[in-house]
Image (cartoon, rainbow, N blue to C red; front, top):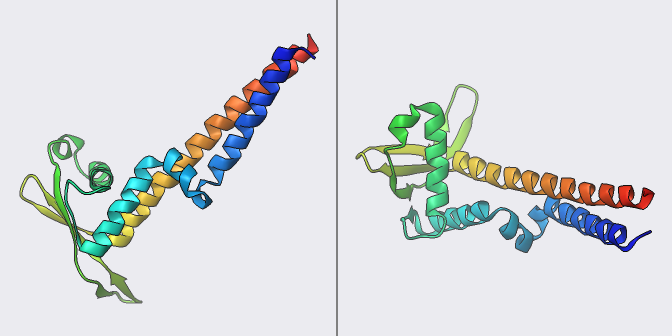
Length: 163
């Protein structure tokens, strides 16, 4: 076996290990901050919102949570209209009970103050759900691309070994 094939094989194994650690990023905070920085910042923003009840543009995570809001708003409205709007402030209110025909639910309203003068109410659990999607997408993308790179290196090593 030539040296190049051995090096490629070892690189492939290292990439495969990296893909494994990436897939387990939820359990390894340092890896999670590397793989999903937007998610990590958004979680910090949610923590600030929880403790201070307000999130301003200077706070960590404000931009990420505002982007989540704009993305969801763009899906439900005309993107051209939403592209002209910016979030000025995010304010958390106290918990409320909402009753429907079959159940009661605790809701924590969050108010987004927009540059066009409007305020939009959203539920904290819905925001948290959208933020969690940032984590899931980032972990999947990282893991699949690193896995593919590792497989390519290992395949090249196998091919060179045959020659």
